[in-house]
Image (cartoon, rainbow, N blue to C red; front, top):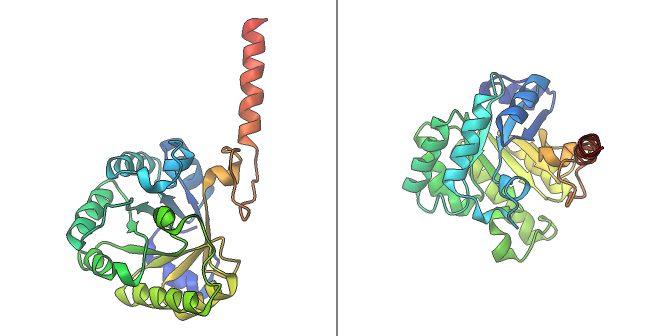
Length: 252
């Protein structure tokens, strides 16, 4: 169980692998922290699994501040990663200002999507003394431009782009990077190439850690579940059962 970002280097070298989960509210964060999860991510996935949006592009800074604050109230141990949402880091100055807002909520580090194309923003955040987590591969905030969620690393050109992005983020000084929906062999190659810890989601088993959207893990969002996510509980089923039991008692 991890209590500080400074432990990431040792964990990459000596294990065990990082177990990372998303949190969007106080009770979930408190439970995950008590369970010993290494890192919590306040992901902009909250737009879909909490707020019912079709994708993450409608999530605002105000939403991220609201949810990050709630999560940080529930955590006493695990470092919290907070996402910079869509259009919140258009310039380096904007990236730093919004990163500071999330750090002021209690986050330990911030994350944004993109590699080489985002280097000015990434460097500005790190130069401001804010720990940074990268995110490469499939980028949910770019879903509209890309026309859907697509696996990355299937062609030589795609692999070259991924390696360039990973190395650029690593050399800028990122403490970790999320590898999303990347061909597993490429994710393994990136993991061996960079000093930063790699956290995979739909990128095979050989990254330095794994992250899942907690509602996917708990079965609390039954309307959609990605193929790589194994539900280990049925919160949706239990909720329906409890509500119907309550209704039957009230209406008897």
